[in-house]
Image (cartoon, rainbow, N blue to C red; front, side, top):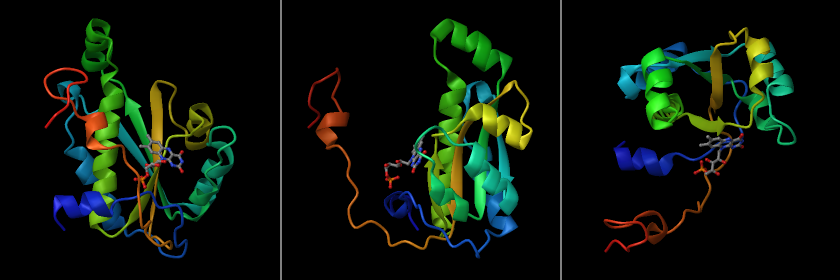
Length: 185
Ligand SMILES: Cc1cc2nc3c(=O)[nH]c(=O)nc-3n(C[C@H](O)[C@H](O)[C@H](O)COP(=O)(O)O)c2cc1C
């Protein structure tokens, strides 16, 4: 698969085959892809928990979701990757004090999308899940207080047909030339 193939094949999958586990070597390959992501000051704040125990997955679904949107589809995912950030003093305290930018949030997004793209290459379906209850996930998974829980990725073999159409804003809405609002031709 070329990079463009992977980008266009990736879509959010919300139906998984619960009887088909993700092989451990594929889990390692996903995290290896994250490990090579760039990060502010090379701080590598990412920590991942690969949850495959069905009872733990049930607990994540029961207690770890945000209000109203319960993301019930996750119950059938054979793997949930929990994306955590263990903050770094230089990048995340000193750097942020000067610029106001929360670099760890950028770092986590990059690394977790590496996982998603690698999963696509391996024939696995994924869905980002950001509608979480951080505090409940901390207690369910024994995550220490100083660690941020940023998002989950549900991973598994898809049982749904790929969407025939996905919507995106047109290029003119997201790309400007030289200054804000100037059309790029
Ligand atoms: C940070 C983030 C959080 C998301 N959280 C959820 C979620 O909690 N539940 C869900 O079903 N989809 C979630 N999504 C998936 C988006 O809804 C999806 O990416 C978007 O609608 C575009 O569709 P596509 O991924 O198929 O291209 C999330 C995506 C991102 C990047």
